[in-house]
Length: 228
Ligand SMILES: [Mn+2]
Image 1 (cartoon, rainbow, N blue to C red):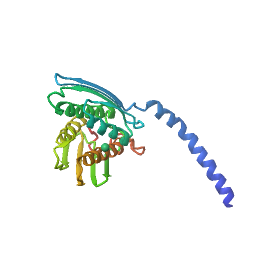
Image 2: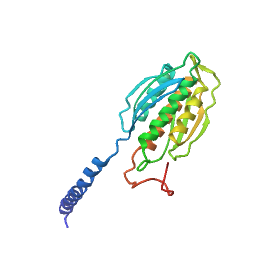
Image 3: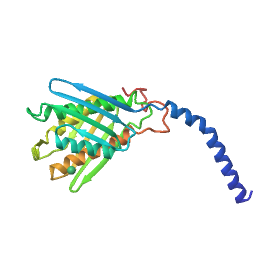
Image 4: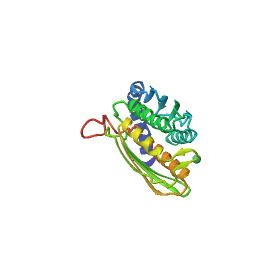
């Protein structure tokens, strides 16, 4: 067979295969779950409302009353390509603790809800992100089992008025509610703003990978058959 003829055959075959795949693709589009969540939570300490779309464009609309947390969540939504809106009011006259922790909790809950039974997702993700001298790795397994390993030592107590300790509390609340395993490991860093921002960006990129749909996967990526 001449090269030209085999190439024509090849194109025909491709067209036939594409045509055969079309009805399946259409069915998948109809059955595709929304992968979004809307969460509201109110206590005597805080009120938090969040909307999350996993398959977003990275649009963030954040107002928590804690400017540094706003900055981190805007970065998280942008670098994870999540559409995320978070509006919180809290007892900031006490300190930022309740608000930061409860925003972490609601964000975790939003991921849990948006992921549904977790079928079809890649489950694992990891990213190492620099910000100047700071370098941080985030590794996630959306396993259903909450576990945080937090190795992000920060010498300074404050970034402006924001207590650096609260990042640990945020990550713990997020992990517990999302039902997932997160390792955050800082490799280097001097400036606390850089360190925390590198951590949030690494988390964003790792979550983007882990929540992405794996086209080769039919069902849940676990030999146990469940990730909940
Ligand atoms: Mn910054």
